[in-house]
Image: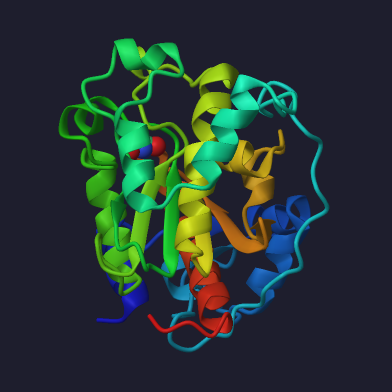
Length: 289
Ligand code: URA
């Protein structure tokens, strides 16, 4: 079975019908998508004239279709609430961030485990540092630990994590093998509420250092919150998808959060497009796996 077929199967969409008008409207609304769609073979709908089966329209880009790498979008408007203010030079926070920026993996691990920089340390069970190969060429970044992750100290171990593992498998990757998975926040926000800007400000230096140590060939950002935090923007996720962004010179591809995909059938095929784009970016970077 091809990787595409495998992927669509794990997502539960062997055949999904999308009105042709919607496909066109999407390309119009998100101009970068037009380039991705242009790379897909034109498929005539076998039954309905106005519909194209996504499963058929998506040729196996991993194996056969050279997905184009669009240029980075212009930096979108900055969201003041998401952007951690730069600390005053010489302040305690500036010193803390400089210290984190100089840490190697063991020290960083220990710093996260003992962190008390925000109130989340009072409600967490475990910190969730991240998991995987520290030489990985792929990095996945989610939002924050949920209940299961807080209990087990590992990211994406609940239902959404199972889907994520299947998505990785369809890409020829596996948790712990050439992929590192982390979150923007290392502690669970109580009741899974949205992270507060101050929590992001305190935690972001850890993620920044993880990325600097890992030096992945590609970062795949999962969901609106992580995408907007990492890219420092308020642009909606639908517009961040389909384009290659950069973080500290590393290519970033945005896709939907697996928990969202569990609920939203229609966006699952788009997630596959995103992963194909990420695969293309990775492979163009001259990387191995
Ligand atoms: N959602 C996330 O964003 N991260 C996790 O680790 C689990 C669920």
